[in-house]
Length: 131
Image 1 (tube, rainbow, N blue to C red):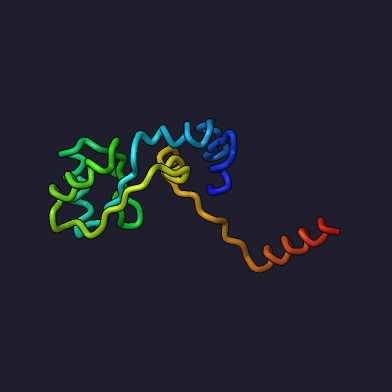
Image 2: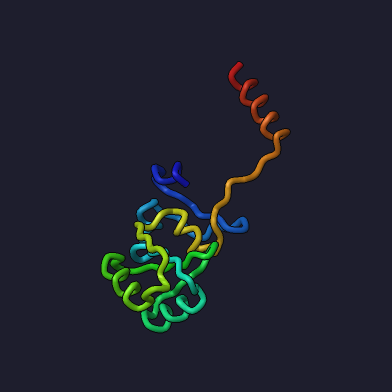
């Protein structure tokens, strides 16, 4: 995704279908604010509490809760006051293309795992192209 940040236009494809097209900034603006991630001692209870009190969609991946706040700087203090000692860590970041992909597909992008045999084949192909 880092390479895509410098592209003029990007298409996000899921299961062989284009689901979004635009510039990196246009796609990031679909997130709607800052991405706040929070880990707690009780993610299930905290998630329900955040959704009920703040009317936010909260997703969980790998024991971390993710939500979008229009202004993370004002949202985080409210979250901490509400959840209290359950909070272990909080992070804020501007939306990334990975966040866009996750929001649109419900999945994260993973690097393809290649076998050592595949790596050798690719090295041979690269060598032949240089000749």
